[in-house]
Image 1 (cartoon, rainbow, N blue to C red):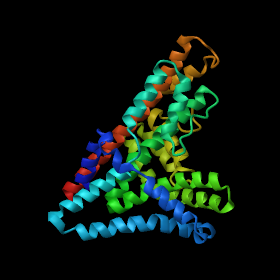
Image 2: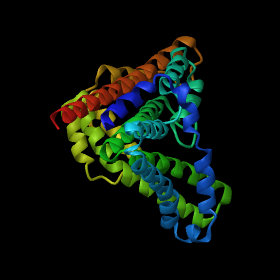
Image 3: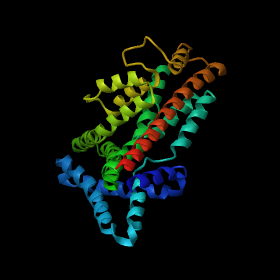
Image 4: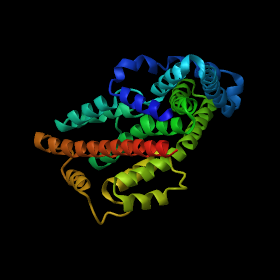
Length: 321
């Protein structure tokens, strides 16, 4: 049943505006602020995290248990689809990527920097100081966005159903809200809350990230990606940094320290770096934008293939089971 719910949920993603009302997070912002304002949550951030995330997840789990035998299971399926749609990432990724590619394609790199804001929790624009770093930032933000919006959600939904998928989304929101609350309150306790949220999300992402890395190897440059995956298997680096390293290996067969060979994509990117970044000519801007667009489309294609690979594997497992 979970597989059918996932297929249904991914299909509905083609019309994200039709269910955008489901992804209203104002209730969780209110709930997290209320819990974080308590003395216990301020002094024991782990307890505040457990209460903030645990009660909504427990509520959904209890509701699903209650509706399991009601209405021939239709209510149960409906709640699962509803929660899965809520658990998916925010916004229309296709529209956001297309807008980014269009801005880059016409050489508007400044607009491209601002477009990156939709691919991060804190809505910050690009911070790279040169074109080469900008390309890496593009890949890092896009890769983690696809992972956080879709792959991690699908993984936890298939492992333990809607409650765990909801737990992951609320954990992402918790980190985002904790950073905002910390900035507004500027207290040591709030800083501890941010660190607690970051550590918890890292733990929650560890297993799906490793499986995603192996999937990227299957749909990308296998030898280089598997080697990089093996090197990072027990790494304590952040999810974003680890994922970028595996994406680089899957895209062009390069490890982080090996530049002896270059794929067409990386060659184009490095060629763009040799141009003067302060040039004001339209031709140079368009060349840089075209190279950046190739980076975006390369990451997009890689993760599209990864999602398809997951669906095929899950379908085979369901059939054999």
